[in-house]
Amino acid sequence: MEKIMLDATDRALLRLLQRDASLSLAALAEAVHLTTSPCWKRLKRLEECGVITARVALLDAERVGLGLTAFVQLKTCDHSRDWFERFVAIIESFEEVTEFYRMAGDYDYLLKVQVADMNAYDHVYKRLVNSLEGLSDVSARFAMERIKSTTALPI
Image (cartoon, rainbow, N blue to C red):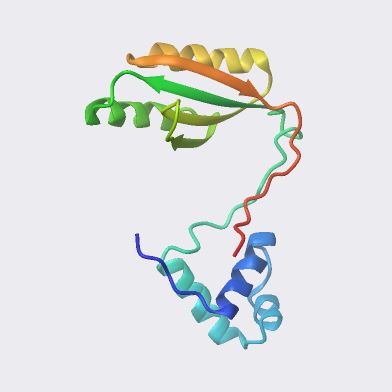
């Protein structure tokens, strides 16, 4: 994947958008000392080259009834391409899985699962282990308190 060259104005725009993607074009342009047309062109370029991938609303998980965060570590004894493709398709079908990583180290995969409570997690766990052969270990850790959570990258 090609690294995109960003100047100071690009970085300032991205920092602003990471904090509040609802800022108007006029507010963004003023904040980075541009007129709206060059500001819009920069934003379009950042979208077209894949730096800006989406503009979304972030929700408070507890306020919408999804207060339990589980980090699930998985080991597999099957590392074939076919197994991996089936596994990815299955995990992508779980709306409760909000993040999914292939890892280096003792475990092969890490899932972040957001659910209402332990019963809801147990339901996800049972669906997971019954959906796919080849998992040799499924281990979960449960967050007691969210101390820091951000989607903003340090640019």
